[in-house]
Amino acid sequence: MQRLVSPPSGKGPAEWFNGPVWFDQIYQGAEPSRARVNSVHFAPCARTAWHTHAVGQTLHVTEGVGLVATRDGQVIVMRPGDTVYTPPGEGHWHGACSEHFMKHLAIWDGTGDSEVPETTWGEHVSDDDYACADRQRTGA
Ligand code: MN
View (cartoon, rainbow, N blue to C red):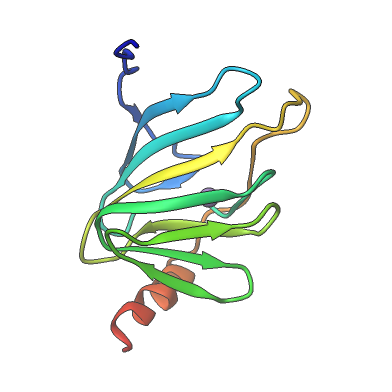
């Protein structure tokens, strides 16, 4: 066995994230594994832009309170221990709720084809769309 050396924490780039987001790369499988695992920390109100994953993605919340929302208006409030799966090609975003930070493991797979992106990014989530999703947390 070996203890793996962790790359330095990275700041989520502004074109893909809104607000302070930091990630640690936990695991990146070498072929034939295509597994990827990141630990991602979102400040309150911080979230991803809209995006899709070519091979789907599983989120597992370890701390805080988070939101994941899809293009059809479905919202899931995520708390520690919750696991949420988004299938291949489903447009969605994820992030912290407005009153708490949130940390999740993001688990996904490479495509095995350098021409096919693992994640396809779209526009930022508007403040109105974010507020609408966040209200579902409190039922307000
Ligand atoms: Mn995602």
